[in-house]
Length: 169
Image (cartoon, rainbow, N blue to C red; front, side, top):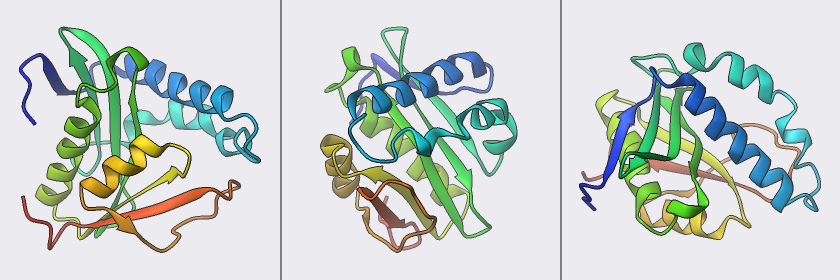
């Protein structure tokens, strides 16, 4: 989907914006899903994540993007290497007022394309079963349930993977 009102841009010059978006994402999950056992615990190392963004998501093997809609910051996504063959999508987030415009899909297409260009074999991500729109998007993009690649304190985590070697462009 192409939309000239939406821009997906590398965000290394906007680290404070990324930190704000990551924090909004965390706050939204903790507030909206506070009844979910373990939701707060899964963010115990969140400050470390914010403090090491530039290292963890470093180019060329990692990526940090923001999405802008009509010049306003609308969302973000990150990509990190897990090893030479695997990468992980981190924190796909679109602000409420920009949902339904295809921004999440464009952010995901950007990191999928990056994963292919960087010669990763497999792209993985985790999400929560109750984030139904996100789960639906991932399935539509070709992600499938994959093996657990880390231990989560939340039982409703879904682990998904996308075979980048055999994924058509």
